[in-house]
Image (cartoon, rainbow, N blue to C red; front, side):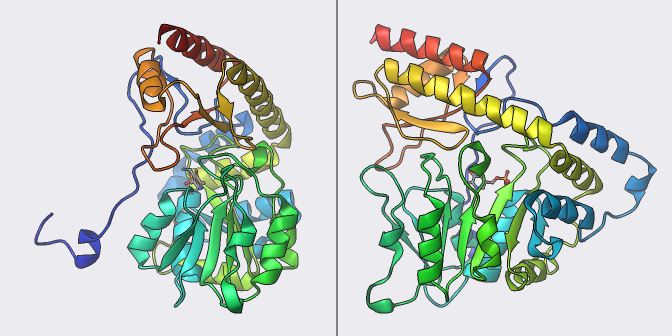
Length: 358
Ligand code: PMP
């Protein structure tokens, strides 16, 4: 605390990202990164972009990337917004679309950056509890007596649970909230969900946010995007152009564009992650773990007889890191990123040893 801080800064509770340890030889299963590298075509494009042209500013509109995203998803580039990671895109959505007179709604157990953005931009919010099985029940988001909410945001699949809301239920939500913006944060959708992007053409209140950090293995490049009606995109552009004209540098634009053009590598690696997840789920269930149904590149598990925090510590002593949240309702869960088959095998062997010891 300093007397030089503004009142806004004094009141902030910043987001704490998962640990990025400097140690080598760790099995790092704590921040939902992709265990496979980025597309070789993306890496080649980045290398090619590191030349004399870096003396010039990048395209502030990242048109080339918007066109590649539009082509991939079969939509017009005018319906696409791009930003420095989907965190930045989400931040602009909070300020540009979700900051309303009425409170917005999101799940009580969800991406912990949402309340942080609410703090930063002074957005009023209410949290809606997950059901007993940890699923999001969208019928709980209907306000009584036809009252409107300021907007709705949730990840699909949800984080940290991995649970998926079917598209048919999202469509009912969009139809019953025509006057509120609904933001679907699809950071993990490529690992087993169905994207809501095709609904954008019919619902002007829908904004879908995705990232290249997970299924395209480019967390280090910081690229995310949103798809929505041109009016929603314009709101995000207005915020962006009042904040930073060049959120994506030349390397990011080149690498992200090439990643979208390499469908084959994308399908190969995401299918490998999905296959490893299914194998890992079966093995952990055999060890007595309860595993929530996951459509993501991570799983959320608890053991009826073993304390989650102690298990996380014991794993760390064996150089394996997973994520434990000391939060009500989920303090007995571990969130485990799906790694390569070898990393998953190391995790299963370590957990087996830990459970046998106690
Ligand atoms: N949404 C969710 C649900 C996430 O888990 C994450 C990753 N922490 C993000 C958005 C942000 O990802 P990025 O900024 O890397 O695109």
